[in-house]
Amino acid sequence: EAGVTQSPTHLIKTRGQQATLRCSPISGHTSVYWYQQALGLGLQFLLWYDEGEERNRGNFPPRFSGRQFPNYSSELNVNALELEDSALYLCASSAVWTNYGYTFGSGTRLTVV
Amino acid sequence: QKEVEQNSGPLSVPEGAIASLNCTYSDRVSQSFFWYRQYSGKSPELIMSIYSNGDKEDGRFTAQLNKASQYVSLLIRDSQPSDSATYLCAVNIEETSGSRLTFGEGTQLTVNP
Image (tube, rainbow over all chains, first blue to last red; front, side, top):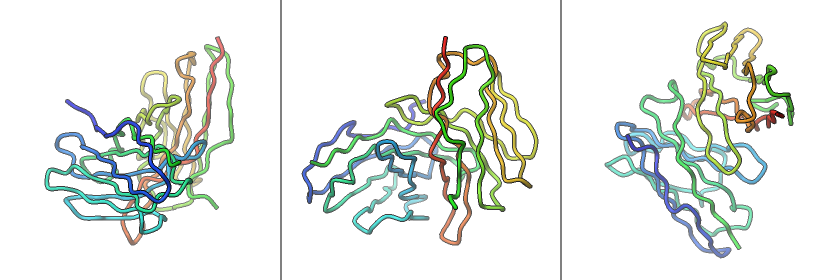
């Protein structure tokens, strides 16, 4: 069974540009979660999508947005990139809310220069 | 007060010793608790989940939960150099906007041969 897949692995953008990160959940998982892990910091919750709807959002500005497609894959968009957006962005999926924990993808390393 | 706090590291133990990792949380109604292991440069990997008070054992790992004290711990017996990683405590936080898995900042463990 394929795990959670994320693309691209690495992404380099210039300040002010937009970045798009993609995630495919484990087959059968309907929930997708996005986290940001800045260097030396813990995982910060960004967004939760389930059945195509945004279910919860962390304490991030509106320029962080996303969506979930009918096949449950998801996209995270970061507009007007700032230097401090440089981080590892992790996507996770689960079958039934959070009761069974999440399975994480390998992440997208975003560098803003 | 942070929602999930872990004992500050780094923690260093000799090979074969017991490593003890601790975590406290602030949400009294939380019902699901997890421990993740994250190797340097990799994504978090779920290693233990616990939902009821008491101990849960899985191989060399034992998770302990005390909801009255809002405390979760992870014991690693017969520690091996391959256990050297950052260990993340995660707690399911319920809020009006939805639930989210909230992570502590992690405890870095080094097992010395």
